[in-house]
Length: 113
Length: 113
Image 1 (cartoon, each protein chain N blue to C red):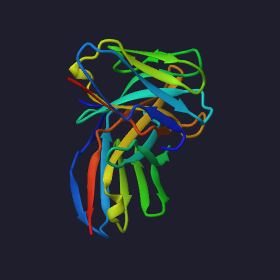
Image 2: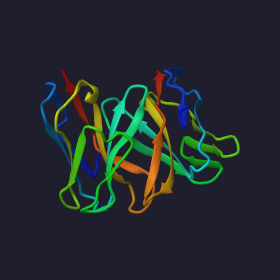
Image 3: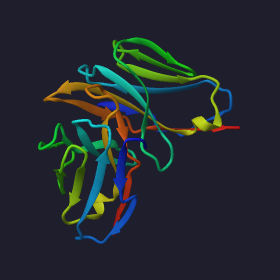
């Protein structure tokens, strides 16, 4: 998806392993978001960053940490992965600065075994 | 009860049919209403958004909002096989410095040639 790049696209982890999901946007927006998408649950907000240097918890933050490295990059870290964190993770930023509606990355499909 | 309810489908229609996708919501605070389209293994992409009650048209797509009934719809005219995707409704309001967005779980649509 134009403007938001996520890496990696796929990952398999063993329970207890750690990993960092990377997100970068080239739209020069202040706010960035991390969501997870699970069948029957919809998209749920994990963490968001309203601007460089600030981060806040969303609806489901437990087990995750984030870093807003600079205006472009917002990473999501799983310190000790659990099977319940098996999901598809999406990073997003506003489609237009200051307005509602997001542009999403193409997602990271994570399986924890 | 979920804040946003959406029939998961799947919905299967012949090419050329009119498709109606719907969501209901319970939170009167929602101000903005959006529809996203998500192709398999891709991130959601914003299709339409609206603020007020009434209809908004964009090509073959019409978004309808009825705030009094807490009900939103997306109509697709002359449906095409390329419309086959999962459609997510989303609603938001401004709270605590950011747009609080709640997504529906999505309706999977298949348009049969």
